[in-house]
Amino acid sequence: MKFKIFDGIIDMLNQNDNEIKESKEKIKKLQDELKAYQTQTQNLNDSKEKIKKLQDELKAYQTQTQNLNDSKEKIKKLQDELKAYQTQIQNLNHSKEILIKISEIKKSNNFESAYKFLDELSAEGNQEMMLIACNEGLWKMTTKDNNNVLHVASEKGNLRLIKFLIECNCDKDTKDKDDTTPLIYASFYGYLEVVKYLISVGANKEAKDTWRQTPLILASVQGHLDVVKYLISVRANKEATNYYGWTPLIFASVKGHLEVVKYLISVGANKEAKDNDGKTALMLASAKGYLENVKYLR
Image (tube, rainbow, N blue to C red; front, side, top):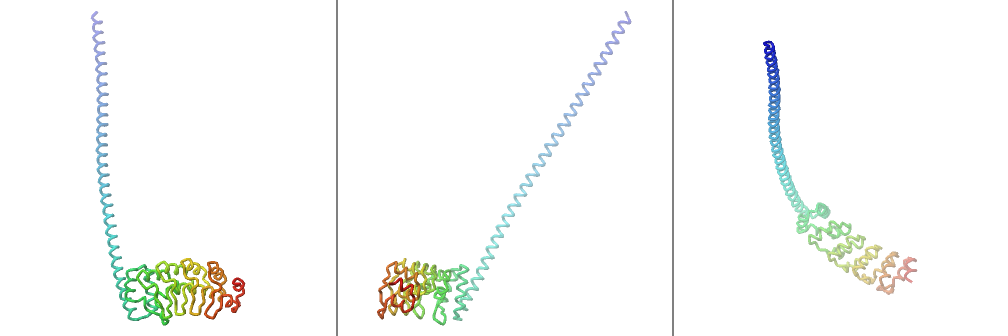
């Protein structure tokens, strides 16, 4: 009996030992889990701090970048202002050089220099200096034949220069020693665009030179059909006569310009008109031997 009791006590003690052991193991496990959680929590806090640090660094970099961009914009603005100032200085120096040049050319009274100079100003588009030059009378300088800059520009078909001169109030109907106007020159040489421009600004389409030749007469003399057509379209007098009584049709006939002859007749030119000697276009064309014109005029 005593041994059984003792055995029971031993079993109880063994059971307690096992329970204690299990409890210790549970405690150890819980301690390990707690430690792992604490470590995890610490790592999380460290990560938050790192994230915060990175965010602060990023913000600082963004601020630095913005400041840099602001500085670049300020530098760009200053560079533009400097460039504009330099351009202004260059323009002032250029204007000073031009004014000196105007004075020199005016004193020299050299036509070629004046024409070249004004042509260069028109190429630059320098209306301000062109106006000063014209007001100083450079455009009025003449060749030995008494042709001024506007005459020669019209003779050469220099439309750009012509426009600048007219816009600077140069006389669009200025006459040379033979009373030839810019429009007469342009018509004679067949510069249609120049003719159109001069008509558009009010040039006299019936102007006459010393021999009473109009723009239409001289365009017919030279056989410039496109110019003839345009002048007729703006109601130029198709029956105008020169000093000898020759009409545009008579001139076209004696010069052998058949297409001009055909056109003038198509718009009602009088083929029976007689010159001061009583001769018609047909008679004069026959005398010159222009058979095609003769056939058409009959």
